[in-house]
Image 1 (tube, rainbow, N blue to C red):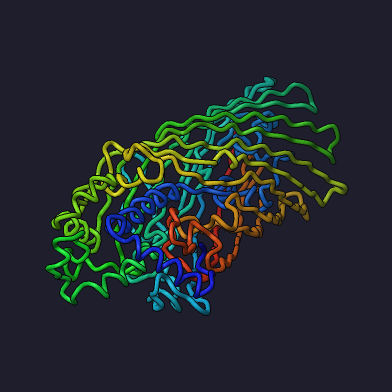
Image 2: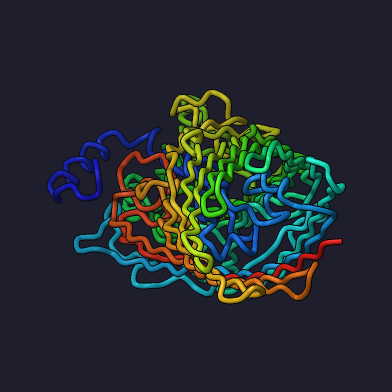
Amino acid sequence: MRATATAAGRAGARAGLGARLGAAAGAAPLRLLAVAAAAAVCAAPARAALTENLTTSVAAMALGNAVTADPPGIDSIHFNPAGLARLSGDSESFHAFGASIRSASGFQAPPGFEVGGWTNDPVSGRSGGPVRQGMYVPAYGKPGWRLPGVIIPGVGMAWNKAGSPFTFATQSYMSQAMSLDRTKDVDDPAQFGGRQVQLQRLVYLAPSLGYKFSDTLRFGVSVPIAHSAFVVDTNMRFPNELLGVFGKLQQGWCPEDGGNIIDTFGFGVCGGGKEGMVNPFKKAAHMRLEMTAPFDPTINLGVLWEPRPWFALGAVYQGGSKTSYSGTYVFNTEPMLRNFVHGLNASLLGPIAGAVLGFPSSIPAQQKGNLSATIPFPMHLQVGVKLKPVKYVQLNVDASYAKWGEWKELTFQFDQSIKLLEVARLYGIPNSSKLTIPRGYKSVVNFGFGLQLFPTEKLTLRMGYEPRKSSIPSDKIDLIAPLPDTKLYGLGLNYKLGKNSDISVSGAYMVGKFKVPANSDCNLNCNTFLNVIYNPYAGLDVSGDIRVRYMGVNFSHRF
């Protein structure tokens, strides 16, 4: 039953539910909290087209990442390693990127808003607070800094012996990145969709080889070795029809102080006292996950065909992997549900009902430990064409395909039985220390366009445009990864400082917006009696955007 059902339908459903309240009534909040927490876990490592290639190459960012048929110097390691075979002599490059990400969000109750009899959601009419960035330092972790932006350095080197068809190279660069920090305002309503989110894939070594087969045909291979990390820290609440109805039942049955002597001989609905009174809009828990994969190699294969000075074709295959993450987790449960469970088990019949349904005897204030997950890093295929009809103008067009459809489901393994998840047995999950959660992402095709102008021998001007389709469908988006379709605009230039050195400077801006009507996205705002996916904004209309501004500079020197 959806939240858009008629008032009469809701009343009938509640009446039927009231007739069955008993052992199941005490179990309702536990079921919702457990499954919602599981869903929040699986939402954490969401990545999409937005996170790819943003801070990888200064030249590519100005050209809409359309460089497969004209790969830029040592950056060819990532975009098309066959381009390494165009280098002559030894060379080095140094680059640095500065990036800032801002994400707005707004929440509004539509006409007729109601969650199990509750009509006043304090989140309604509010907007998300300020967003800043953080960073993850390999071998150290995530410092507590809130930064207006981040600076990402990198270095590359290439070696080619005069007359040899082989070029060897390596480089460090950030191939994927996403960072959101909403911790400044403790009352920020967006914190229920992630207080901190840090997703990154840092390539620290990329042994590569380019081979010049002929003057027109080149091949290349590279093996990027990456350190992958993500941190997700979020507050959680669980507005839900069933939880709301149960809260109203408590209001009618329990005195204001929560005590009821008759209830003590029943199921202990009131036994948690005032703090054990259920409110579907109240903060229920807090979760923090921190995981890394310090050694994750993949392979890039490239080919470049340049039959004419004005025409070239390029293609690159970037292999995927089954990335093995490990790290730590912390679950903190608020007094509302801890006290309720305590009252349930302090009554006469509550423990019997809990034992029959497989519930824990208590929920600790904090439970922490280690976890692991094997998450696919998708394969990526990109092809491109270069056209240079006149001496002063060049056009690049690329098409890319990323196999994010592999993310049909994600599995997380905990080092112990999670008390919040033990009741998930009711939903066919027998092992509360292991979760397999559906995601339903999709593989997408994107296009990029780049234009270069050559007004002088020393100066090159660059412009780019890339409409980026998200791998997350519109009915799966959430605030942990607010990744809608976006548009990227880039500008840049390259200037030759001398015979053997040059400098590139680029800037780019990317923006995307989303609107999620109430009850249309069961990772965000579904409101049904038995929804089992995390929906912290159930029944609300949610809107938002994401804006990324970044600049880069690269200095190259040939020996």
